[in-house]
Image (tube, rainbow, N blue to C red; front, side, top):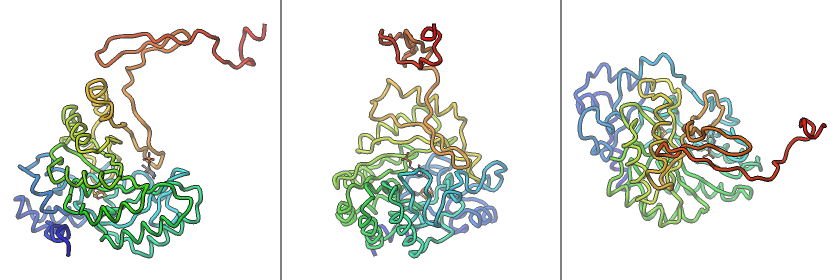
Length: 361
Ligand SMILES: *Cc1c(COP(=O)(O)O)cnc(C)c1O
Ligand code: SF4
């Protein structure tokens, strides 16, 4: 067994372990964990400094998860876009392939809370997913997901990567993972040597709070980047955890410093069991407004809402950058609230002659 597997094996999982460790009511813990499994590995636990801090709230089960009257099991209707059980094919040219239901920790805010840690994904299901991708030439980009793909052993993961690389129409492979930030010991030299054989390979890593950027995490991300894998981040805005412009700013700057390019900042999905963690949309817009002009453009993610019922991702911009736009000028407000005019080109704009009064005369 590798070191990371030993660490994972020592995770807190059972209700009695969690209630003893965090001095919580064991009957309540029992009820939450029966519905939504928990896993807190010793590395991630070591980041918790006190009860209810931003690391604690991400992974310690909370009774409120059971009181959610708003959320839905499958908020993005992934099942509706799932031609075979391991694939979600929503956008024409790219598809998600689920490899496992396991993760380095079980995030209480997870969109796939309905199945992580519960419903196993068999090798046979993954094989059928690869068959589906092979049969659909329009798919250029496959996103390995789950659960967390990096929970698989090197050999299992390599078998899948090899199978995918035999598909001629597939350009890029992406891995969506929380492992580099939540179990950095998993990012071994051996893993990186294996991964680099399957380029072009990209990785998008889940990070929530700047406290997750430790020395170990910097080493893990450095190794992946040295293996030629472009690294992006995905961050979900969460109430009482990271819903603060200063926290997000610090996180984005720290990510860039460990060679991770901020990619998406997500409005939380309407997932059952997470309503107590959801923020108003204005909070994200406010944060985006605070970032513009104040930190490197390289460190600014896209703020998106993944629409309920499978509508897809929509980028959200603070509304007040553009004040007015007409044929002559665009009136804009900059990050310091100063107003500027950008003149339009002077030549006649191309227009629809049929509907134009001047042309008709
Ligand atoms: C987010 C997502 C993707 C990837 O979207 P990008 O904007 O290309 O990163 C693909 N498929 C599904 C179903 C998704 O939810
Ligand atoms: S690692 Fe990802 S898939 Fe797993 S519980 Fe966390 S958010 Fe969900």
